[in-house]
Image 1 (cartoon, chains in turn cyan, green):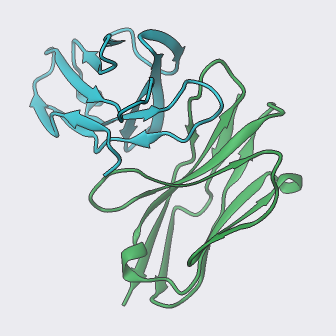
Image 2 (image 1 turned 60 degrees about the vertical axis):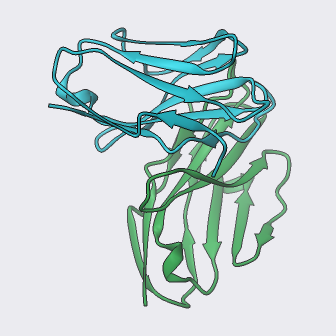
Length: 114
Length: 115
């Protein structure tokens, strides 16, 4: 158990809908990262937050957004869902946003868009 | 741009065999870190090791060992005396001295250890 929690574990929804994925980092970690794992794209970095502020952005679609709250939990919002958004979404946390701390991953949320 | 290549998409071995998973990386950063993660069938990503670009010493942890060679931009992972529980997908990843701490992952190598 990495100490990172993600809810829900599974999510099934329809095209065009909007969903919110939630992540709680390990106790003491200030940085949260979101990654997407799909069959065609592999594991891709989406976005990073550090202590409430966006730190880095990767291949995140405009339909997707995220935020980190004062209690350091984070939410990833996916809207206007398409079939291709079906993937495993991981949240990871690290102590800080620099110094190449190892990132500890949550169990993931499996999103299925029908 | 950073890139990680794991040329072996799938490897199958018999229990107790040694197996090496290859990882080749590309980066223009002078300071960077390399990682290995394990993804068992249950799906979670488990951190295995972190190595910085200034430390080329090999590392051994039980049956696991890692060989970092800057000259060939490789960071290979060897499992000695493999066991069925080692069956998983293994990912090599790279983090450079960019604004954040994002990981660039390779495509992964699926290791199947048969009894």
